[in-house]
Length: 127
Image (tube, rainbow, N blue to C red; front, side, top):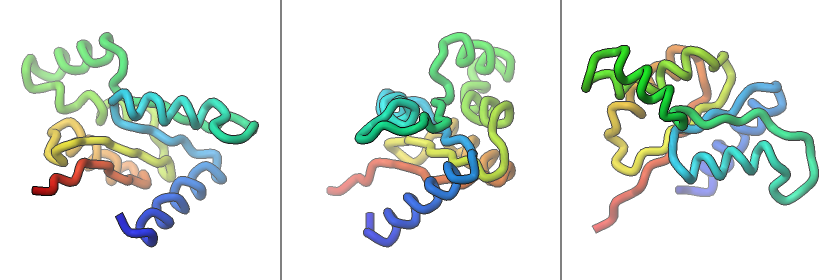
């Protein structure tokens, strides 16, 4: 990632936080830890920042996955939660190692429709 791109991402997150918007991350242990650091204090004592991680409860995963077609609804877990809590200007950070996760791709489409600031983190495979 270039320094210019990293700076742009940081500005997008800063602008969202300054406007009292939410930061939402896609499911994963990395996302959960990062979100906890935004709510906690990280390097300095400050007010907590609004941050949450989508698709982390087994109840939400099961209910959404089952309600939207057995075997086919799991690609809607994050997008349904985004529709429930996201507002224009919030930041959504999906994390996908392949870049091809149906769940992440559907959530990115919904995030675009909801006018969220979206930064996708994915693993870059180098051979």
